[in-house]
Length: 173
Image (cartoon, rainbow, N blue to C red; front, side, top):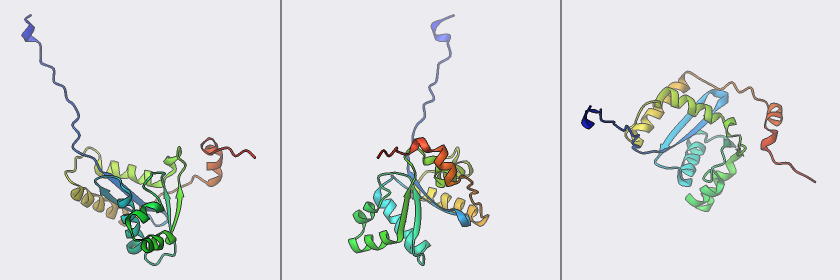
């Protein structure tokens, strides 16, 4: 057998074509969700979406309640970096923010929706642009919203206190 008679090995290496950040908002009682993609995750993107959520989606709501993960961009400070102080203050006054535990983000219902989005819309696909992705996201969440797919959340606060006791700090007096 000659040295040249061996089959040539081919190395199939994954080639990344790009990445983006997808923001997910869910309104569980009525089974609505909204998603938007941006080239990266910035405080400006978060603040812009909070303004959209507050002024366009829920303009008559006295409070917009957010349960969010602990990312450095998800905070009132991002509003002040993007908008004039009076506008940032106006938006901040309408927000009630609750952060998920740092080591318990799986509690975030948005994670359930992101999983559904992945399986139902994104799995195995390469979408060539942010604009095309936002079109796909819109089609997905509009279809899901029309079918009123909600989240049947059965994990109670009492269960959380027992099961997640290790996540919360111990306060010693």
